[in-house]
Amino acid sequence: MTNVYSFDGIVVFGLLFICTCAYLKKVPRLNSWLLSEKKGVWGVFYKAAVIGTRLHHAVAITCLSMALYLVFLK
Image (cartoon, rainbow, N blue to C red):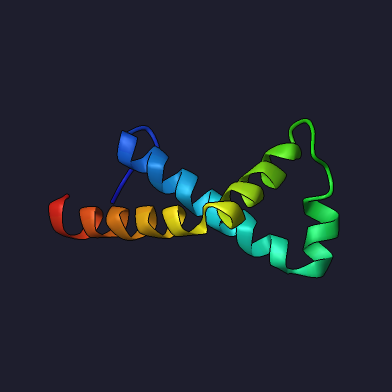
């Protein structure tokens, strides 16, 4: 079990946040409601969705490597 205050926990939280926002960008109702704001605090969701959609190969490889690290090495 990882905690948020370790580096592993921060990376896992960041990856889950990016993947969730990228998924929510594909849902039309949530896209217009949650990801419409591009600045401020709500803009973090939009920016994470953009990172998740543009760098989807890198995000997927990082998720897979983090999962293997957590299962086998930690």
